[in-house]
Length: 259
Length: 345
Image 1 (cartoon, rainbow over the protein chains, first blue to last red):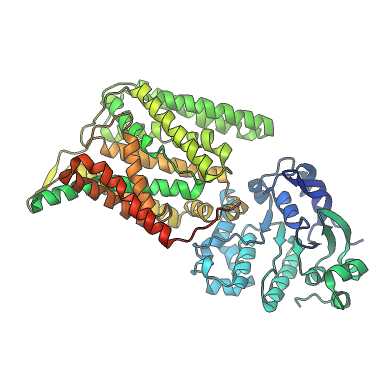
Image 2: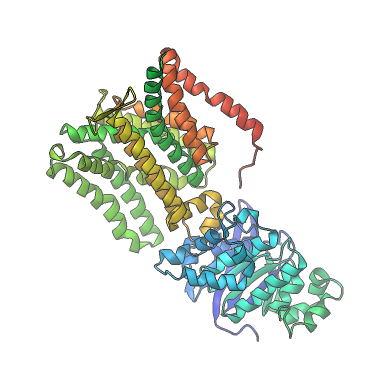
């Protein structure tokens, strides 16, 4: 089984409600150390809600979350950031009127607060991953293009040196070339030992890069399995990959998009 | 009106305008970070001035009881929360800041004979008394409502304002106070006399504004406050807690308010309710800047000071009317030039 590595994140029986509407029902999910796990599903399936509840942005109505083996009875965003979890939201949530460099600096806020003073080196590494950000470092984040914004959002999250990165639709609204670059970076991050929980509408690209996958529909996990198996699943092919998608996804799994 | 009078009025207007500018900056800061329209801003001016006056005449300032009381209240709320949610590690810090610190300030006032202190020390003691009230008020009144709509926060701000005015009357009485000037020096500059206090007010305001600028542009925490003001969710995801940002902005607002009070206490007689009007004029300045732009807010506040000064010469009965009427054309202009943006959530 591909899911055997030591779990970094375990989610059990997670429920989230908005008022009387339950957006997530009894979800179970696991991310192993150094793994890429993807959650695919249609709009409104509860994917973003799930990430929000894991990160502590949304209160959960029930369920248990263990991060790095420790139970997290009362999740607060600040605490999860300090423990090494990072979320890149779909909205990117950049600081538009601050410079690229200052946006990155804010990514290191928690580490700075905890007494680490290594942000110049970390920023240098982020610039190596995204050379475009170095060129734009004194520019205001609000003036960046869509692709650059996403690079900045991911780069800013990396400034915290996260152990687990939650990515919400990183390819949404981006040009194909940029999508390719983002997925290359995701694969590289895995090589660097960062575990990733990836939410994607672009199921094909997500299953190519991931080790394990979950399918979420109307707030429930309806299917899970190693990414390769999911890509071959007739139901997944029909709903998420479209004609010929599975064959391509399966055939290119041995050599990820990035290489 | 001859040139001499005009210059004299200008000097007056700029002195008051500098104070309004400081308050306008504090209002913009608090609103940007917490979305609270900080009506009680002016109360900190009155509390600062009256506390300094009490210390100088050897009375125990009423703000001491306010600090001790607020400290106990915050400690109770925070301890209850810490015990309930298992944050026991925070307990020593809660006790140190909310119980021990006020007790130390009380000890300083009773043991050190503030009347015999040099004025700078009296001012420091005043700030030590008044400034912590800012974060404490945030903790008690606004932190539980951090996610509430702007209107709810405004209503709470009005309630806090009314409570502080009432407490001001209770602790300091209805008589006004005035403190001696920082310096009796005056300079004759080409026929007009510039008095020392004017220079103190303008100089201190400029210095404080410069320090604030450096804080926001150069420091981690200053940038974190800006980040919170720009994108609250983004800031939370960086580990910048909304509570920390709120307390820090209220701390700065209280510091600015109390210092403003200390600066104008030698110029005008301050009563327990003077702060409101002073704060409102800072608010007019802040509105000119759309509660968002620091430089425009400061410029607007100087304009308010000048307008007030000249209108008190030409139409002194209407001076407040004229100052507050300024808000109408500004609002019309703003509503015509800005696009309405729906509030998030």
